[in-house]
Picture (tube, rainbow, N blue to C red):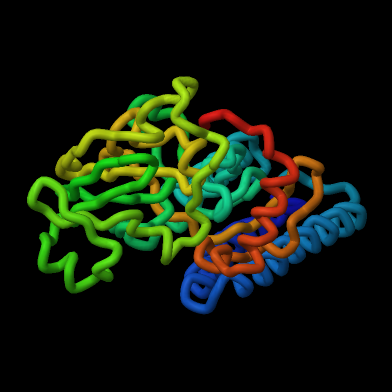
Length: 306
């Protein structure tokens, strides 16, 4: 218990917990750079605390055990640490290491993202979402929400067509005429997210030759069920998504990625330019261009779906 000093042990335990929560709230309002800087400061204080405790331990001679130097006090502190870590991970923030390219060029394999669980889980069209797919709820996927409950959609020749639940008049007021088509007496928006999210793309080498699953190219019209969300990867022709296993129930959604706290490529080189960036930041041309170059260099012979 911090060299036999119970008061100091309790003080440091509570202080670190409160500092972490305080830092999280401030960074939520003042930006991710603040979070990274303060987190570095927090770990520095923690390291200094360890060094000071070793020095103080070396200066103690003939130490007499106190009443709180019992095994169950140490067990209590361990349980408090485990419980606080669990609560933070469940209700505050959780980190994910992404190992697939289905969201390339926005989110890359090797990106490590923090998920903000305090912010609302109200999912909007176009949001990048972390969720558990309905066919394997023990695994986490990262995709883009392309349709909300009540929306209708279909895929034709790789193109996504979306009929928003708000109806035809809303579509006419919110989209350009050249992006709207008429089908089955309804208005549909063709590829509604590609302009706003330029990382969405197709792979020309994936063609309708009988070697690839049909949902990549053509997908029959459906209406998304209540409390379900239709997800697709930005790397459209390589993404294992709702086209194959259906829409995602709301209870399977963890939330939206907050920012990249670490990123490393297949050559174990750190992508310094991505640290602290949000998914929106990574849609800037300089980041997309680098992702395209990396993709062409490393995955030119990629024919998989993941």
